[in-house]
Image (cartoon, rainbow, N blue to C red; front, top):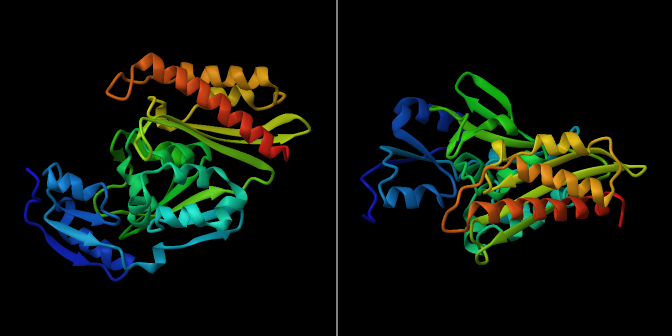
Length: 289
């Protein structure tokens, strides 16, 4: 089957209007943002919403800005805008590295940041980077808004804390002066989902790791994160030996599945190697190399 089931459609004029439409139609309604995940699912009839609520006109969700000590990314920001953002590049070069390996220009021109996080694909690049940076997401409903840590946002594959009648509106990333960051990915072909990918940030002061974050995709890392490896590394000297040990710990806590992209032991090897590469480059960046 390659034809969507019949559905109604409404174009929201504001976030409040979109929330009203979601409340009206309940669990039979779905948000339409970039559509690169939803439309294929509808064509295969894996998703059969009775109402599509199109939020593409909502300029209030299309910002990248700094508020206090956070970078705020609106949910309707396109991947291309993340790739080109001087704000994100200044503070976390890993965003540009990550976006360069997401799909292709056609997808990046239309796909949205909010859509990527809400899809919750186990191999989703931005979810790994967001987890590494320990960001938060803002979720709105008719009663107000709530803020959820990125590492608590995903319940599991394709399942998040966004409930019926709610919209993810913003992603917030803490600014960390002196942070270096990097993103590493292995894929079968350009633009494909990851076989394994890793995003990291490291803050080094006087040769010692003051703070760090490690996020992994496609390798079964709980909540796309490696807290055990982070705990090991923080407070230690940024030596090659310590970075390698942190990478090994990160890989040990992954639980990849064998599939068409590769066997589990290969993915574990990649988790270790890519984590080491990303940590090494993050340290060099933090030290101004």
